[in-house]
Amino acid sequence: MQHLGDYELGETVDFTFVTTEPDTGAPATLSGTPAISAYVGNSVTQITAGITLTADFDSVTGLNHVRAVLTSGNGYADDTDISFVITTGTVDGNSAVGYVVGRLSLGRASSYLRIGAPAGASVSADIAALPTAAENRTEMDSNSTQLAAIVADTAELQTDDIPGLIAALNDLDAAAIRTALGLATANLDTQLAALPTAAENRAEMDSNSTQLAAIVADTGELQTDDVPGLIAALNDLSASEVNDEVVDVLKTDTISELSGVPAGTPTFEDALMWLYMQARNERTTTAAVDTVKNDAGTGIATSAVSDDGTTFTRGEYS
Image (cartoon, helix red, strand yellow):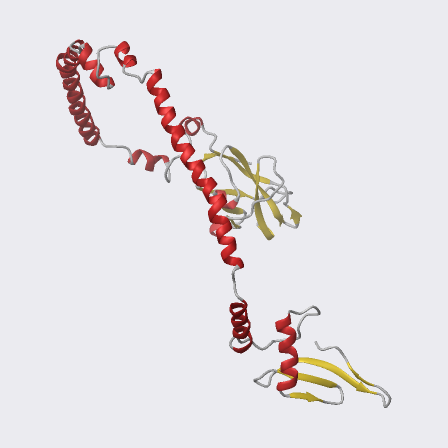
């Protein structure tokens, strides 16, 4: 068994091993549909994806070649140990199953652990993507320019702005502060003196009371005069006015045909229309069914009928 070294996830490994006759030790062909499987760590799951075995490689008896594609898609992972084992095959009629033909590790090398997994396709690709010396110099020149501008602004702030702000704050007088606060006079006592007196407050309350009394009076007048008047007007309908309304209902207003049988407790309008439709519209009766139709000739209700020679029966319409 040979140790193949440390590889990175995603690489492809190629290695060879020799099979020999048990008796003589001479190279012998690995036959019997041979196969190589990979074991990751102590897992008992065999990986066969991406593994190609060529027995008698280059027509050399007993020389076997293995190519394994070490990708995560094939079941491999970083920071693991991999064993390649014969899982099918014989040598000179003897089973070769269980022989370990190669071992390797993925991502265990000290340099790999220090650097970590590459951000791109490989560590070399990551290094190639780093800025060049010229690009670094350009960036440094830009940073120097910005730093100089900051230093200049700081110096100006120290010599001009801050002293000016301090001087402006020191120059505020009492009048300016009162103006900023919205105070028209010099002190709080003057502001309090401008508030309404008790007599002025009482006068305002008296005025409000007068307005409230007027509102109450208007409400009382509405209760004693207006509402009874409205009730009297409603009660003053004459018999002729009532008669005109009734005549209008009987001679002018119309109602629509029913689309089905009225309820068991119909309105007067539905009951009257039901009787009218039975008397006016087409109606058919067979030996089993009586049908009431609408004005268009469409049946809207049926009733089962029967006659046993003694009693004629018509059922409820539905």
